[in-house]
Image (cartoon, rainbow, N blue to C red; front, side, top):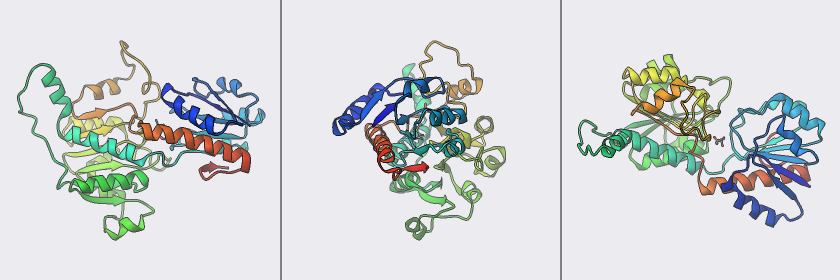
Amino acid sequence: MKIIAYAVREDEKAAFAQWQGENPDIEVKLVSTELTVASLEEARGFDAIVAFQTGEYPADLFDRMQAMGIKDLSVRNVGVDNLNLASAKQNGITITNVPAYSPNAVAEFAVSQVLKLLRNAKAYDRKISQHDFRWAPNVAGEINGKTVGVLGTGRIGQVMIKIMQGFGAKIVAYDPFPNPDLAKQGIYLDSPDDVLKQADIVSLHVPATKDNFHLINQDTIAEMRDGAIIVNVSRGALIDTTALVTAVKNGKLAGAVLDTYENEASFFNHDLRGQTLSDPLLTEMLSMDEILLTPHIAFYTDIAVGNMVRVSLDSAKDVLTTGTAPTVVVG
Ligand code: COI
């Protein structure tokens, strides 16, 4: 049995080595390139692929995998919005993901960024670096007493709720499939719009689908409370970024925590030091104290990285040996 892993980073290699030690009969080849139709040639003779990228996995990739006799693609992350799943299905390729590598990694990061935003961290960092040690005018806000709106109460949303409740926030939430335990707390509202209307801090914890493209847009922002904050550690496509930046600039929103951006693929996790960014909106957000932008790092903890490698390899092995895995998305 032979598995090839694409886009392997230095920080993942120890986890790959550990799994290889526990599975000596399986050949695992590591390559640093991302998976594309061109780089797929490296997978000739392998049975399964393990991959990780924010860029697209296009339809013809799966046509080629099928022609090469590769049966499985196991991604080392949770989101599958960048995969052409219809093509994978058509070609009989099994797709697996890692649904819960560490909900805490993502929720803890989201909360830490909310705290930084409320505490005016960007403004103070700049002031302090210039030896301006004055307090004013950057009076901070507190989470305690605020209403936090959570859209999506899956694993990450649930941790977000627990942490925010620990700070003393009131929670309102929406999910088309309410969690029975959370429902007992009476936190669910009837619609996402109801959550947007009531929350001081709105946090998005839903996958990107066709239906929720630009869920946050000019119209939905207009429904939100004046001075509200938006938190997106999920998928860039959920927000019309131009509408968001406009709302922050005109004072409708107090700010945003963005660990993802709809046009992130050619920027995030790339070393662009010394280069002028070819995206004026991204440049503008980086210059704004009210927007905390990070390059999709909420997931990036030691625990999560280890789980992503282990679970994706286990899934590929399961699919090759039994035809399925607990983490199957398509197949
Ligand atoms: C995911 O697991 O889907 C993430 O959002 C991590 C990302 C860097 C691909």
